[in-house]
Structures are given as structure tokens and as C-alpha cells.
Length: 103
Image (cartoon, rainbow, N blue to C red; front, side):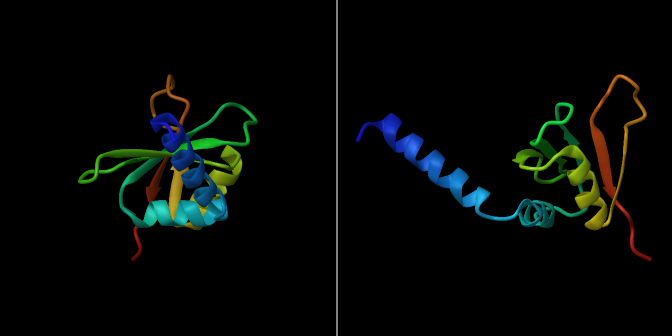
């Protein structure tokens, strides 16, 4: 087996593992890695896939692709205790999400 075939096999195996979980579970696990970071997400209009990124302080920036429409991702982030809104800069089109502090 060539190196390219091994890499392709590993990549398809990893993507199959991630896709076997419900998107809400993937999101929950991603947030659990660094729950107090700021998260941003963006997608093309009406696209069934969105990219969510974590702007971590200690862990740095990390992004994953989610099999969710942006509207579903918006709702899922609110369900996880985040407040999501457009950024103040009108040239930016992503959504920013920050955890709502618990009293």
C-alpha cells in the first residue's frame, strides 16, 4: 500500500468516525475542550455545513466543520449557554458566541 493510499484510508476512517456521532454531540465535545473561549462560526448562505472556530487563549485557534446549517448551529450554541451575535465590525459576516456567565 502506497503512502498516499495509507493517508487516504486514515482520513476516510477519521471522517467516518466523526460523522457517526450526531452533530450536537460533536459540538458539545468541541466546546468541552475549552468552554470559556470565544467561538465564531460562518457558512455560505443556505449551506448544510458550517465551520466553527474556537479563539482559545491557552490552546490557540482551532476550527472544525459541522454538518449543520448556520441557523441550527446558532440554536445549538444557545442551548450550550452561549450568547451569539454579529460582531460590531460591519465588514465581518461571522457570528460570535460568548458563554453567558452563571450567577
